[in-house]
Length: 409
Image 1 (cartoon, helix red, strand yellow):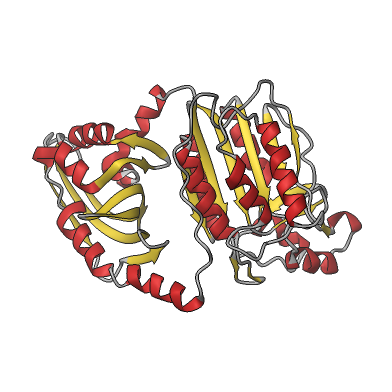
Image 2 (cartoon, helix red, strand yellow):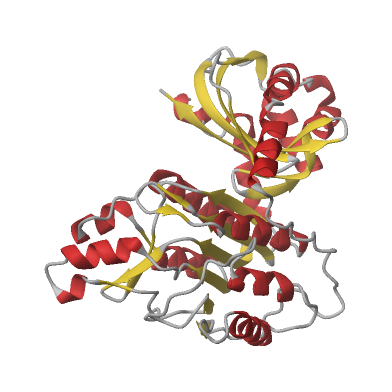
């Protein structure tokens, strides 16, 4: 076994469980890009994505989420989404941020994009139809929600530098040429521009949050309600639109199955309050490092069920797939059973903490590992991995709600 065997670290075996997944699993990828290096900042995409992700979890979706993603991070999230869709019945993609159309093809714009010339489009942006293709190949129902029609400086810059009319970047997004078992919702009509909104959410996201969890409502009826709200809120300046080829009725919450109570959307905080909120989590970096050193990197392998209960939330997303505590404990027990000894270490100075509200944060760090196998003919595994943990604050400390890792040279 080589260094690539550590890509999934102790949870490599979890990926094998996807073959036994329930046929009606529902998996979502939710992305919000707002802080652009070359185009300033959009106020609401990250708020929209965070709130939509929470809402989808409350109605039974497994959610992979990412905010303010560069090209590489965006492609990695799409890859995790593709892996998680194996065995799923429904796939959903929600994107808020800058998007554009060129030659009738729609693109997501990563936050690190530099689109001063049309020739750079393939290198700097991500075609939305590629995400749709991934869903259509693996699920019976593919749902796409695009709040990506905001007034776009990238489109203006590309159009100025285009050498042919066909390469001109147009306002808004275009219709998709073909779909199979799909439903695609645009925040406004094709070629039109949508509003970012003056509150916490865009008009489109706010309407989705109000209506998506209504029991017994078909997705088509939901979009009528969403469109009515947006038209009213924007005084007819914005009209959501959809295209689709679903072969059966789809309900986010089936009749007689009420959704969990939605978490109320918070009002936008004044700047001083936002700064204080970020400090309240950021200043807790010491407790996160303590959690990593004393718990995550030193698990009690003799009492794995208790260890998992102490380290993880009741369910956690591992490499894009949702597992309960019993499944995590079983795989970890089986993993450690093959090693005569092992050790982990936190690379000094590598810990980076990014707050996501009062009780959520992301921790990224470099971890040294050393596994000595019981089988003397097997290879010893040593090296370093970059680990990314999504954490929530519980009454008695931190809990892991998401986990990924990748090998480092």
